Image (tube, rainbow, N blue to C red; front, top):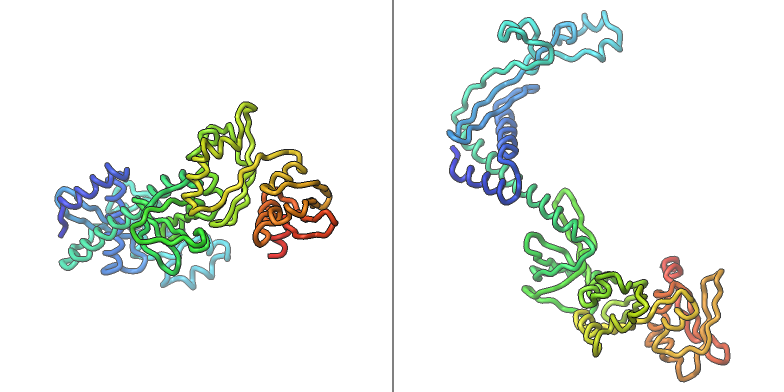
Length: 387
């Protein structure tokens, strides 16, 4: 019926490699065998249990009956007469007697001396000749299920800790714009909306992405990946910049339009370290490496400042600003620029002022020296309201 060498080998492997005790899998196999037996040959209300001997491969089946006191049950054949003598509350406290599930106390004591109410009496069940095929299939299904459960638990334990980190894998397949990435022990999903616009991927290509969410569902563990997330850019800099990894330099804010341009505000917690210089690296090697990973996305790095006027001014880099007037109540700013700086302040399609507004959290109006509003960058809160 069973290939015992294979089963024992699989159980030992699961115990060693995935930490599932052999006894737990054996219990699951026995429970599944009992369920399969009951489905094929059992009756309603029966409690059936099985014992499986790993040495011989033999399976024994038993029916279990629970010992009950006659005073605590209602017999179906005498139900009307019993109910007539009881209150509704007393009826609710009693149980319906099922001869397949219960055994009366007096009958139980004929079989087992000292039997008590709620104890169990066990009866061996006959062996069925055609049960071998069912039992073999059941054991196989249980082992496969346990392997899946072990994989699920293991993946959740490993990648649950890695949420918020960069992971690397190979493009497995592409379906409807979504990219499935083979991460070794599991598969991650890089949705279309989380990809960098303009990037193209081929099957077998290596790809790095930010693991932004680990989801546990009834269908399994889903790893959600992103290359457009602002945190992906921050984590890339963390890999290239030791000062970020050791918390000397901190990324305070990011405003990103994936594949096009990003503005990054950083601050140093050590007065001897220039935060912008640390991010750029010698001869620009650090920022160049990150830009290369992002397909040439332009990156503006500025120093964060608690002085909002200075922060807004720097956020509009590379434009040079004449004056900044802020309205604390409305969290808005009017920025005056000279004629030759207007195009730089606004940026192509308004991108520079738009990113500056996202970075600072302030609404920014760009005005010429004549006082005419030339462009407006909305704060993130305003964009949400409009959306």
